Length: 311
Picture: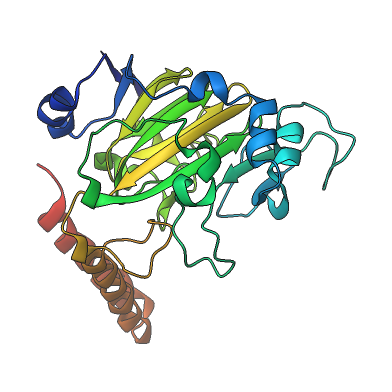
């Protein structure tokens, strides 16, 4: 596995981002851009006063390496004030699972049926003006703004998003590890998520192709912005109690995105259809003897490799 540092840029203007950084389609760590007073204002006391009563649905786990495939966490709802208080400590006297449990919030829309898109301006209006989002995309393409809080030590499962986004770190330090879309065949995917949970000590007997990945990494501090292009796999490790905001936008024609996707994580409509067609095609082979299934399965793989594998 090769290791590379994410490219870092200082004091990036809108013009520099759109003309020099964005077209590269690579992650970029951006420092020195004005994101408003949130890095100073968003203390535990300030947030508890401003939005402490807002109920939030939180991932709670006894394992810091949260895994969305095995679901090694439970969902619990509590006031944001209590979440901040618990997530900022290593041990709690009030808890759901045990006194050393870990917390992770990915804010949702207000609709209890999960049909509303996350937007800091709508769900947390009293603090929305504290953060200034850089003009790195057209307003008409905006999709969501996601408020995130995590305990120190929380490591989120490796996954990709179908939209471009920027991660704005506001409180705490964080390590972000990324892998190129070119490594998709080495990531052992289930949907948009990787089966390789422990990326620092992977089981290469179980996931041998993971040794071939090219790993990009950066350390984020308060005020930093990380541009994550669509389809880039990423894994975030909180080195401290942290607060961040993600901004997602539609960089492709809007009709390619699933209109019934409030989270922005469903595959593009043509891609979803293609994947379903592949799954149905594989099922067609089930009526054949094993020898024939293997043979025609390999023919299908060969056809896909001939069409899509870079030479």
